[in-house]
Structures are given as structure tokens and as C-alpha cells.
Image (tube, rainbow, N blue to C red):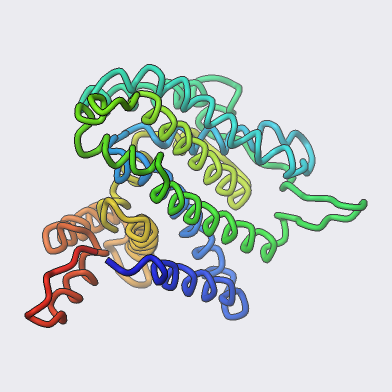
Length: 331
């Protein structure tokens, strides 16, 4: 493992590169980078549950969708202030996560997976089958959020450059927050729960409270991703809450490498780019009409060849390059 003082070098370098990218991006690649960054936030939120706490949820998309829908519904007919709209979207997702977590965390294993899926489907049908969310067609964001100071718009998310740096700042802050959580007493408790919850209880830890705190924080971060996705696309629909979306973000973690923050970001980027590649007829021809099959085979191949995920590839190369006298070190 890299020494703590060097652990921020690679993430910081990536953030600097991303900050400089708008100067060379085309409108298409600009939109693609923003999409990757938003899904990286979403993947990081699930990494808190799966990788750090050992809770596999198949209903995480509910919090993404709630954050997105609240953003659009609360905006009304014009451009709302980001000062209250962003906290409202995050708080709404966190509140639903508190409700779902308080009930679902009383179960374990496959029962926990199915209960989280059931709650996500409940939220899905609320927006799909009622006029609240515009039914299956969804609803449009009529005005993108702004931040006004002194009577002037200092931040306008209708401006592509402003939106880009807002998403980048959200990704950096999410990554930094989870890195701090991992190193904190709370994070160490979550790691202990993942390894052996019964032993943590015997040591005097109230594990339910720790798991519920992680569940709510993960829901809040997913709500942040939902807010950014609604602003980016200008529209939301019930598919954001579907089990397909929950499965997709879980695949991102598996593809990148569960148990690593960098793995979540790498997996989100790889999954999004592969999906974009296989949907592009100019690159894959007639296979573009069957992109789900092609993407599925590709992910199976990655998992078979790299069982630790894409982040395990660099770790494997590092061990191969290490002198024979050294002990192998885990990534």
C-alpha cells in the first residue's frame, strides 16, 4: 500500500487534468466527461455500502432518482437558487435512505438485497404510475439552478463551463469525504462490521447505528448525483429509479474493483465509456443495436480475467515488478 503522504498524489493529478480538459473538449466529449464524473459520484456512494460496510444493495438507484425528481419538482417554472435546491435534493434522498435503512438493516444477506430492491421498486412506481412525476414520460427541468450574490448570477448551471466545474468539484469533495471517512473511527468501525459484525457487537459497538449512518450518507451522496444528473440532462424519468440502474452501478464497482475508492471511479468511467462505445454504430456497426449483449460479454471477460477488478491490474503489475526479496503488498 502506498504511504499515506503519497496516497493523494494520483487522485490530485487526475483532478488537475480534469480541470484543464475543457480547453480541448468538443461539445460531445464535454458532455461525456460530465456524465462519467456524475456516475463516479454515484458509484462512490455505493462503494461506501458495498466496499466499506459489506452491505450489497440492489435498490440504490432510488436515492439517485429521488434526488433528480426533487430537483425538477422543486425548481418550478424558473431557475431556482442552488443554495436551497441542492440541500433539498440531498436531504430528500437522505430522508428516504433513513426510512429504508431503518427497516431493511434489520435483515441480512439476500434478504437485505431483496428488501432494498422492494423499496426501490415502490419509489419507482410512485413516479411511474402517478401524475407527480409525469408518468413514464418523466418531466422536464424548465430552468437550471443559479447562485446569485449581490444581485448577479455568480454560478449559472445553464452555462456548460460552470456546470462542468460544479460537477468536478462535487466529485473531488465526495472522494475526499469518503477518504476521510475511511480513515476515521467511524470508517474503522464499518470495516470491522464488514469483516465480523458479531465480534464488533461483542466489543461494545452498536453496529446498527453505524450501518444506518453509512446507509444514510450513501443515500445523500446518491441524491447529490441525482441533482447533477437532472441538471445535466434537463429531464428525469422513472428509469432512474429502476433496478436496472441499481444493477448498473453495482457492475461499475465490480468492474473497477470493490473495496477501493479509485476502483469505483475507474469502474464508472469504464462502464460508461464501454456503453457509449457499443452504442455507437459508426464504431461497432450493426452490433450497436445489440449493445447490451456486447457489453455483457465484455464485462464477463473483464471479471474472468481480472477478478479483483481493473484496479487489480495495476496491483498485479506492481507485484510482478517487485524484487523477489520483498513481500507482496496489497493494493
